[in-house]
Image 1 (cartoon, each protein chain N blue to C red):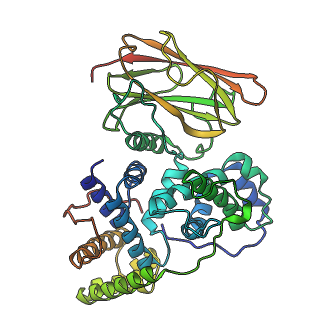
Image 2: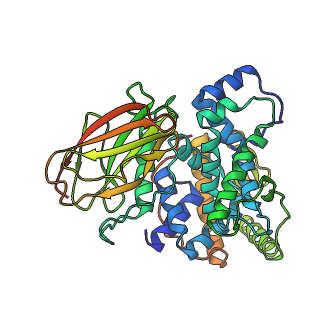
Length: 216
Length: 230
């Protein structure tokens, strides 16, 4: 399954709206895949009325993403969506409530704020984050330089050109399952590389071998 | 979950993604483990650098399976009788996520399970102390459960409901009477109950559902709990 970014915002055709309102699993699945990264981005940078980030961790953001979609996909909410207004805005409306609830529970907000007191504007990385990104970029470049030509081509297709798995598999002359397996091995090697250079704290590569083949 | 186990899951999440069970379990672990939280943050940055998006394809698949298999939210476990309850909410959530994910069939993700035409459904799980699921039962079925396990109820409701749960032996399984629940599909009741001496023989569990708004009775669902060896 490839990531699909949010499609252009336009009024939904009646068939799509009907499928969404009926809660058809394939439609919900496609909508989730299309918008989950946008919602994740928004929640990750969400700031409360005092400017503090609402979510401290990846796990908190993930939980909030699940909660957002869970509410947006409830029957009552589905029936209330008209297909005219932006679906991203519809999702972010739920994300806003989820974020505000989280902030209130975390005591970052002492009173119930107004709707406009959760800011999804990405103000860019902090100086520390920017420095870490630079360090990480250098480590990734180093790693790429260690790869044999075939593996390097895979790395470039998937992580530089960001070609979808199916197209990358075709380009490399392998099946998609083979590509997934190779990509998995590549990421494991990358993890070892990062660990060796002290980037990833607290994660030591155990040398486990993946036995379960993910569905493609 | 130990920190070492958390680290292994972090690795696997990065490399190939996790099952919904593991994902929920890891999320609960990192909430209390600063070391794993920091490592997860770093790995997320690596994924973003690789894929140009906050979530890798593996993470998207994992979250989708958690969501469309029946979202399981954080489960505060009632610590009845002090700290005797060994199971963690994280392990319980993971186990529930596993079951719900496993059972979710195409086309029914947002439909009540175990419903009887009344818009409500009930399912009981018996969860071991290590977070694995020993057994599950729907209305009319029997749930074997051992001392030290935890009984957790899942419900589905098309509208907000009030539910009262009683057992034939008089044991209280949830904070009854009249726990108000939101409309949900395969959501966990916010409380669970450890199996103790009260489950000494077959015990009928009865859940009475009523509409929260009107108080109109919707359904009475029953299943049987029975003791089994650990």
